[in-house]
Image 1 (cartoon, protein in one colour):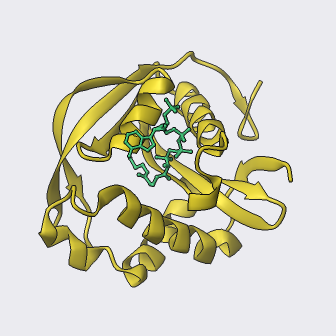
Image 2 (image 1 turned 180 degrees about the vertical axis):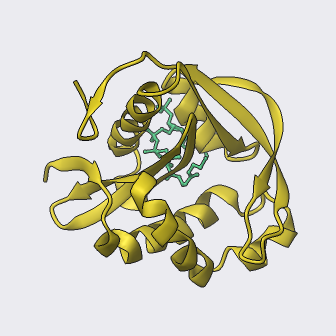
Image 3 (image 1 turned 90 degrees about the vertical axis):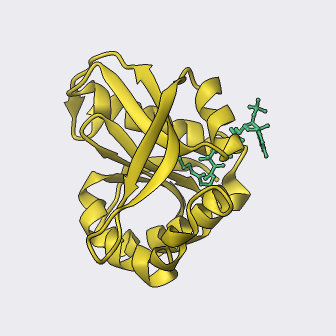
Length: 169
Ligand SMILES: CC(C)(COP(=O)(O)OP(=O)(O)OC[C@H]1O[C@@H](n2cnc3c(N)ncnc32)[C@H](O)[C@@H]1OP(=O)(O)O)[C@@H](O)C(=O)NCCC(=O)NCCS
């Protein structure tokens, strides 16, 4: 089935929250402070999704959401792909989309990745991203207090492009 990338809409919320919750566990358990775990339950992701929708694009295979990317400013803030869709190029398509969104307003994109998330780091490096050093990322919690997570900052120069209706012109 063909996978398409499109702007997220509110009815995608449940699927995004479920993907985010499962993928977060896959990429982060064992690599983040234990203090963050109580703030990363299914309900926490459901609560965070509505505010993310305007900044999020999804990968859809037919009616099924199989991945998403969230971009805020020059940061590729979230990138998650369902386990069965990993290794298929879906993540690369989402990341390319995210890079194009950043490129509409900035010349350089960045993201934070947990140091121990080896699969994600390998993936970013294969897509031309460089490790720019350590960063303590302030992970948001529902209570408003952030938990500092030791991460690596990755960066990539992105070509400036005009975006029309979310597409590169
Ligand atoms: C990170 C993610 C989006 C990458 O997408 P993907 O489809 O899995 O990526 P790919 O399979 O194209 O690339 C992964 C690379 O890591 C390699 N890899 C797989 N498992 C690995 C591991 N345990 N350690 C190191 N490298 C690993 C793969 O072989 C591949 O490298 P290659 O292209 O040289 O063969 C996806 O794995 C995901 O959603 N993970 C869970 C959520 C997450 O961690 N998101 C990122 C938060 S910053």
